[in-house]
Length: 223
Image (cartoon, rainbow, N blue to C red; front, side):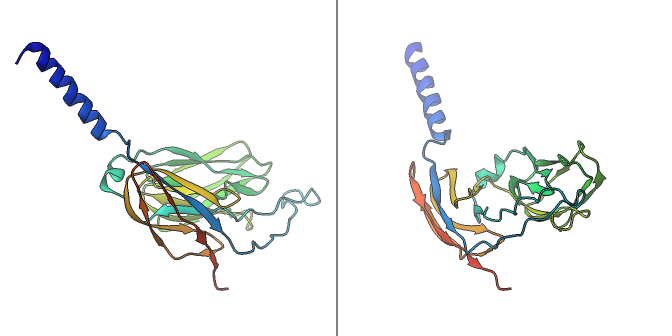
């Protein structure tokens, strides 16, 4: 074999290896989540400033749509990140946060009063204590699971953090639309979390370079 041919063979092998490793055949899961009538949470005055303007009602329409399992490679390539859950107008923002394992979440106090952030969840039990406006607390979430978040100063404040050990999840928009990109081809169990109710998981098949459509109807939890 000549040197030129050997060089061409090496290049061809490298290109083939790159093609095999590149995520060129991934697909997308998308759809719409229909919710039951959302109860209207009455606006309330600030605890710290009684007589001030009422706060906006709590938005409870966001859902987290996710795969119940993922291919092994998804766990090996998981990269921790950084996220933010603000405290503003005596509400957590966003109210629903979805993150991967290892992510650090910052909890800045953007209000004009003291706040506290804590959770009694077995997934991540923590208490940042009370801290003044302009300060920020941070927590690292090292296990997958569900983490309700509260403020011990303002009992009406609550939020939810869902921690995943794979990247195949998303938070729907206010209209209920969602999209999970870069999903390897295959058949999966797809489900969602909503504070308004529950759904029956459904199987979806993601084609190479294609789209899988999946809509959900949330059934209200029993009182």
